[in-house]
Length: 314
Image 1 (cartoon, rainbow, N blue to C red):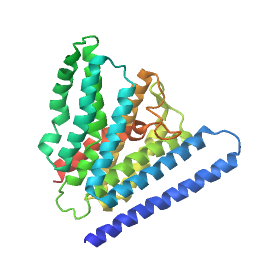
Image 2: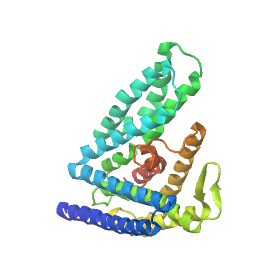
Image 3: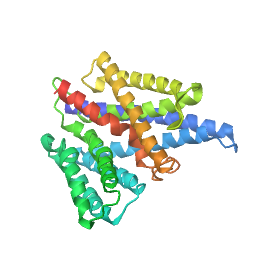
Image 4: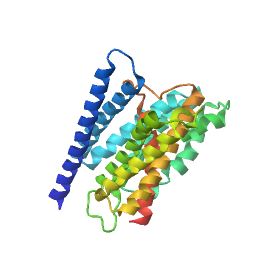
């Protein structure tokens, strides 16, 4: 069974690599046909494909190195994401100590708790204990100006960038009844379906989009793109149901749920960017924004997916 599961993992990555080779070829041909004429659509599509290549290579390396490496990888992702989130917030001297705690204590300890599989603590560590700790730490400088607002921003950043994202490696700790596959497949299923939904919403929106979903929050998102992307990504989830304990009907329903929450995650994070007056969270990924720009949808879908599995299958 171990060898069989390992071969299936290799096969899975081979399939995704083949899809990306095809997508890269299409992007290259489109770019050649466009010539010197600038095309934001083609450039954006190629940037997304390149980001997927990086994602596939990094996740593949983490999987080969084992569960510990996978947890460390998402700890690093949380670090970059929280850095991007806090860099857009106005800070005062009173924020330095709580930010120090957030980066050097909260992130490592949250992922350590996942490593030792202490669900009873990592499920409440940030929402409860860190929620109380951050405003207490902010008292050190006795800076009361915008105290509530400043504390809330750090708390919210930790919830989104650390707590929510940490549910992806937490999937590896689940023991599901009747599931004989590798737990890592559950994380792969979630990442691929949600990320595919993002890309397909963009492609369908450019091809068929006419009606804006939220013209102020995200002008590029359309009703046609939303529906097309979610339907196609859900179909991908159904096609990948063999990686999970889901029936085709269950894969359809869960795929719809995580794609919808992923969409709202992207929309909420876009609202924050609009509030801060920026287009992207950062420039970590050349030509395609920062870490949060790539994982904003997973921030909202990961905890939902985790708890669906934990309470309905384990």
